[in-house]
Image 1 (spheres, rainbow, N blue to C red):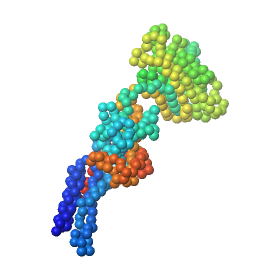
Image 2 (image 1 turned 120 degrees about the horizontal axis):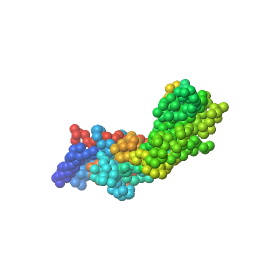
Image 3 (image 1 turned 30 degrees about the vertical axis):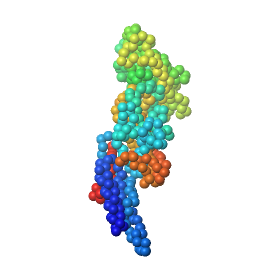
Image 4 (image 1 turned 135 degrees about the vertical axis):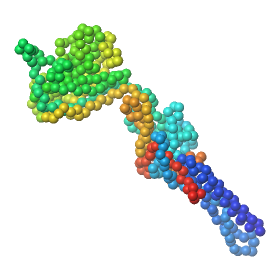
Length: 445
């Protein structure tokens, strides 16, 4: 009699436990990254209470187990780039402290993150998102693990140290004579004048930045003086031409004019000399640039490349600046490389203009790519790496201990985590602007 009561009681207790599991699955169906559990009834074989009986019968015991399903849930769109879903295996690694601690490190499939007041990327419950930290120039990441943080803002400026200019100077351009006839027939020097385009072949500009992030404009006036030779005149901010030609090593020094110097010369586009001087001469052989150096009238005899780089130093004015908005705050030295410049019978074409300086900028947004790289975008057009997400998986997923509805912790049964970067090895890729929903089967529940 008591055996029958025991069987019924055990069955009721087992069903009650199963209902609890189903109820939790339904209640947590709106929790992102939640993994539903299934209650497995366990059959217990029990002897009859009658000692003389040799029969056995089955009874539903209370020793049922709850098995969690780690199947991937469906994903939905999110407007936040910090809402992320894992397309494949892996779990996000989060922690309670800024310094990773084994005891306080957790794992989750919920990718709903935001930034706290200090710029750290955290979960809705305040857990820090861990990942690989950026290197010194924020162009990539190191193997050091820590909390991921958005880049600091504003970004400090960086002065120009390298510039690259490549263009095609049309070989059909006419050679500009060194002399020209006046109205009276006398021959005078045919000097370059920015107000008369016939005194130069073509002009090109590129920007550079000083140490405070101010942008300055460098104008290159090209003037064809021979079939294979072009003189180049260098003007800065429309205020001053290079006063002297490059020396044998390609060095040019330009001191920005003050108001007093401009008043003395009567023009902000000339120096104390009567007319601009060629800073250097481009020598071409078979249409390719072979040398940039001191002005010369000797065309190259072969294709042996000598030098295509000028070293330019700009110095601030000794008095009040001509234009305060373009004040050069400190000395700038940069290398200007003309490699790739050609002289083919084709229209003038700028093939490349690059320089490594930039102005200060404010953070405008964050992006996350499929490999888990978090990048910050700035108003100055720069993009820097803030870190790369770290993912984890386990040989014994079923052994993880549930801390909350979507956060888990390791146990002896789960084993140590297998760690790596997204889209590598066994780990899935990251899908930004997405949220993984719970994998609860509502119809089944």
